[in-house]
Image (cartoon, rainbow, N blue to C red; front, side, top):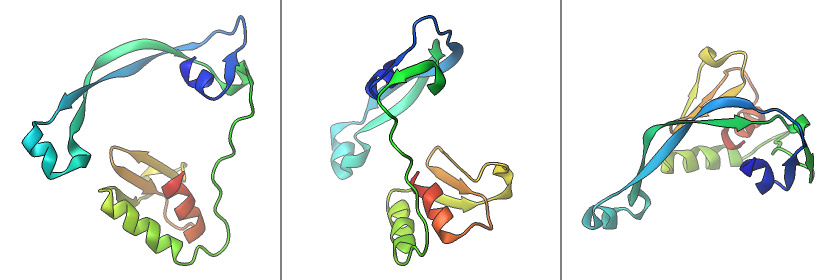
Length: 129
């Protein structure tokens, strides 16, 4: 419910959620001398375990309208190369693979996978969405 509340929406009274296993993440602080080398890696997240929690579909909620997803159309020009350079600087790997079909794009663990054969605009959309 917390995520829906953050979006200005509330779960409707009487709605039943689906129980799932959600990860519990801890934070391991890096030693100060190591953290000073690269400020981005001060803390490291790690998996502690799992807990039960509930999720609800948007149809089970009411409230503020949800934000529209980012859409990229037409000629992306230099933005395509800029996004690729940004991903590389962030240490995010971009791969094109058939293994995610029927999905057009997916991201996980510092990696973005895109189904090949799409336009540069669609590729850019999947990389930033």
